[in-house]
Length: 297
Ligand code: GLU
Image (cartoon, rainbow, N blue to C red; front, side):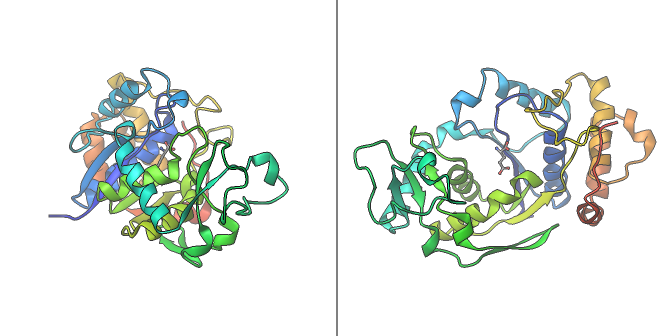
């Protein structure tokens, strides 16, 4: 029995696009190749950013691409108690503090300078909760499976926000608590999240959680050289089988797995089986080194 547990953790701020398909597919193939589990977690902690119906669309899109997850879907909006517990533990350890400072006050500094570490500047005002970066890992180091050793100075990371002034949980706390609660051994996700990993490593260390393995994918760019995202209106993934097949093939190609040409018209189950059998991160590593920009056909 494999001890590998992977996950796909989309924020339902809109439908999935090609870039998110590539991330989902890579984490799926990596998990299945290892004989492991692949879990789905909907990261809906920021309701104003999550339009009605977006989660349902994401679930349907994943099904259409044959990306079947194990067990029930988990929803971050159900995990408040776990986040409260984690924040309470950090407070007890003296690692979290309330901060009333506004961005405007520290705009001349590269990161928040920690003014509230030894007492909140303006008691009674709405406060965020921040992590003490000066009391943890020094330096913050991990080895990415593709990008190799990553090393960060905690002073350059600053004191990351755990809970926002508007009372919403911050992504960094939620993702770390959930990955630990779900026993995630392997995080496979887009390159744009690599910069977040040092804060997540700090938090894992502070909370005594195990360190997952990380694989960040080379950036997938659109034909115009722009990062694919909802912001630059990358088109939503289709759900009809005939449109899905060539796009799944394009995603395998974007991951540099070199699927045979003829596979592009094959049913999704067959394409995925080919992808699992041939999954080879050495090909991705070459891609990461070249940082060649994959394009959608
Ligand atoms: N929810 C994040 C996103 O959609 C991904 C979180 C993660 O994979 O750690 O960008």
